[in-house]
Amino acid sequence: MTRGYPVRFLAALFLTTTAASGPTADRADIPPDPVVQMREHWLDADISAFNFRHSADMFETRSVPHGDAVRALPEGVGLLPPAYRQGGVTRSYDDWARRTYTNALIVLRDGKVIFEDYRNRSQPSDRFISFSMAKSITSLLIGIALDRGLIASLDDPAGKYVPELRKGAYGDVTIRQLLQMRSGVDYEERYDFGEKPSVAALIHRHAIVLNQERFADRAVGITRAARPGSRFNYATLDTAVLGWILERATGQSLAAFTAANLWQPAGMETDAFWIADGPEGVGRELSGMGFNATLRDYARLGQLMLDDGMRESKPVLPRGWIKQATSMIRFDQPTPGGGLGYGFQFWQLDDQPGAYTALGLAGQFIYVHPKSRTVIVKLSHYPLPEPSHVMAETLAYFHQLTAP
Image (cartoon, rainbow, N blue to C red; front, side):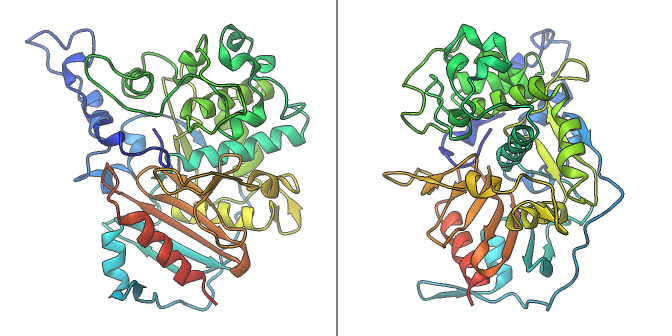
C-alpha cells in the first residue's frame, strides 16, 4: 500500500466484501471476523483520521523501543502560521489544514520547534502510520547495513542474500536497482479487486488483512517485464524485498535492527512499531508501508537527515548516505502523483534546491528543505482517490513556510 505512484487505484483497497474473510465466513451462522472487518475499513475516509493513529489496535506489530538518551527538541521563536496564499486565493491556516486533511503538523528550523499542531483529537503520544514514508526508513537501514559491512555492495544481487529469490526475476536485480524502484519485475501498483484481482491486491488481501502469507512471498518466482535498471516502476514489492535482504544480511528482525541502529542512537523519545504480516515467529515487518511513530519522532528523523546523519557530532547514519539517497533520477514526465524524480526511496516533489521528501499514502510527509534548514512533518488523512487539489496546496504552503 503506497502513496505516490499511482494512487488513483487505491480507493477500493481493503473495501472488499467480507465473504472471503476466513474459512468459516461463508457459513450463514458464523459472522465475519471482526478484526478482518476493521482492517478492511482502515482507509475509509470518514474514520481514517482516527484509524491512522490506531494501527496497533488492528494489526500484528513489532515494537521498536527507544533508548534512554533522548534528543531534545528545543522551542524556537514561535511561528504564527501564515495565511495560505496561491493564485489570488487567501485562506486561513485552519482552512488550509482542513482542506488538506491534516491530522498533525510540526515545523523545525535549525533543529528547533517553531510550530506544532494536533488536530482531530490527536495528541503528542499518538503513533501515526507512515505508509510509504517507511520506504525511506528502509533506505536508511540499508545504508547502515552497507556501512557496517553486513551488505557488501549496493551492486550485489538480491539472490546473494535471499537465495529463494533466484527462482525468479528478482534473483539478479541489484540492491541499487531495488532502492531506485527499477527492478523490472512484472508488478503493477494497482489494487484491482473482483473476479481477477491484481497481484498487488492479492498481496494486500492475503498478507496484511488476512495474515495468510508474507508480503514478500510473491516475489519468489515472479517474472520480468523489463530489463533491470531500464525504467522506473513504483513497486512496494521492491521494498519488501529490501526488508527481506536486511533480515538475512543482518541476522536480525527489521524491528530489532531499527531499534539498535537507528531509533535508539538517533535519540527518539517514544517507542515506535512496525506493522507485520503475521504473528511473532511467523510474520515479517512491512518494510514498505508499516512504520508507526509520533509526530515529534518523525521530526527528529527529518532533522537527522538534514544534519547528514549526525547527532551532536556523532554519526548515526553513514556520512554521505543522505546525499547519495537523495540524488534524484529525474523523470521525463511527472508521475500521476506529481513526482519529479526519485532517489533511494525518496521523492523529489518540487524544484526547491536540494529539497526531498519521505512520502506516504494519504498525505504523509517528511519534507526536508536544506536551504532554509527546515523540516516539515505533515501527517494527513487524505480520502482515496486523492483529491486533485491536495498535493499542490500542500506544497504551496510548504514553500511559504520555507520562504526567506
